[in-house]
Image (cartoon, rainbow, N blue to C red; front, side):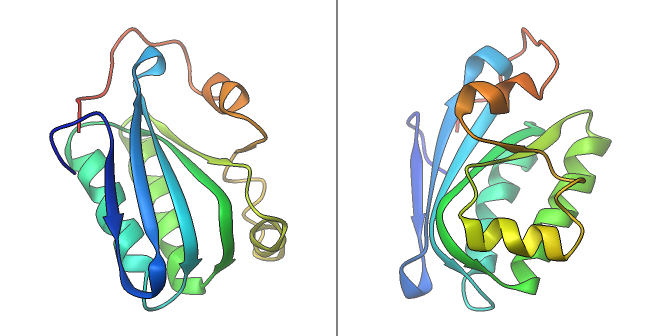
Length: 136
């Protein structure tokens, strides 16, 4: 996603994804803003692909600024969860908007994908690691 410490992808209908490494736990924080619908879910998928293809399997998705998630976007989350777990990592949703949390509950994913109220709690989901993810 670029050569600096953070990167931003902007897409259709104003969706933005900002990437920030969290080296202490070898994780990457992706902050998402906008609606994740059938027009924009590929932007999130691309951002996730950049991180995972770079060798990082510990992802935190800040969904506090996402008020809608389509079934296509939920599919991206479920697929990502399986992939990062296979790589001995994990996926944590940070501060999901109440509408997003309701969808997770409705689909029965609330127990499958960990949710955290702050970054510190999100990082506690991952086992201790001295390995950092590659820089973006």
